[in-house]
Length: 173
Image 1: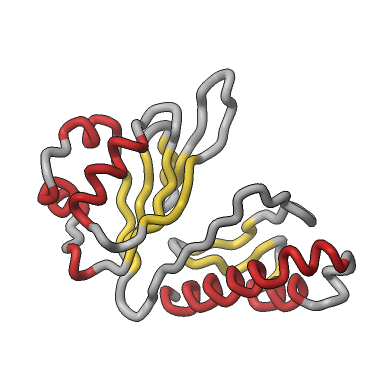
Image 2: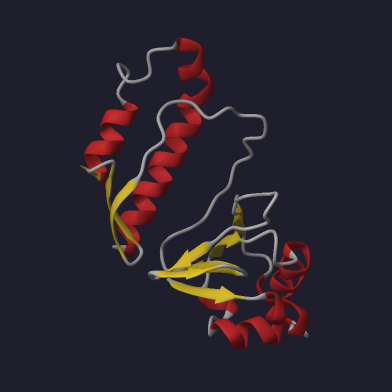
């Protein structure tokens, strides 16, 4: 795994596949895909993705745009304890870890909002002051998902997400 911060200036400077490979220090053969989180107010995400794909296609790029105050056009992205008011963060995933995506357009978030309460570099240790494994076990128990309609709508995606993230976290820790 390797994580990098990038800026709009770099997007404008990008001049071919070699540019991002040199900036990130990641060769295409050494990554299975990227997780990307972008500030939509200060970075042209379409131009970034176009040049990034020139450098790393056909590996997947998953992630999204950070949300923030639309009226103020302010948001932040984070990397290794640093806060960036502009740009994006991309995390290269390699080794035995594979990335897969799913489309979940039109889904409505359900349940509680949780806070990451203990994180060390790129490893999540606790969510809502609970160890990660206990958090996921409780979240996935049938008694926690009481509404049948919601359970039917979320069960397969919850299991996919949980298994993927648990494997991902285990692989990087």
